[in-house]
Length: 176
Image 1: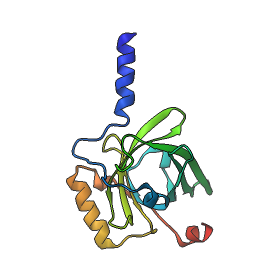
Image 2 (image 1 turned 135 degrees about the horizontal axis):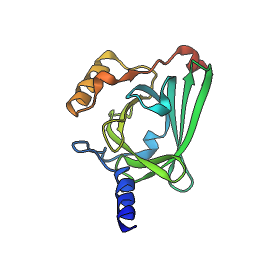
Image 3 (image 1 turned 90 degrees about the horizontal axis):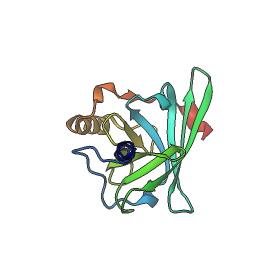
């Protein structure tokens, strides 16, 4: 039983770990991060598979945490999918490292490791490099910025060749 509990504690703490060579944003300002973000690119994972027009909206919770609403359009079922979650800072509130849960008591690391000077884009990963999101305040970014970020991501060991670039349509923007 002692080995099981030790293993469980280790596994749960690994969920909010920071990958080697990745540093969370310092001097993070949560109020500037709140609001609507468009998903520009992501590494594939089951809970967003097949979704287009994906966005994430963050708002302040009364308990000091952050509400998360992820939304995406499933063109196969012709329907919107939505997931609600909550996040809390792992340490200091001025460091871009949170733990986020969409499934009850289970939390995963939400590590913001790059932000545009004016919070116009965000690079986010989890406890390892198998999760990656490029978010933007606008549904599109310039080719120049995209290329700069891809170069940075490749240098940090992310599988940029596997990125999915998310379709953001004008019709979706009219629905918001």
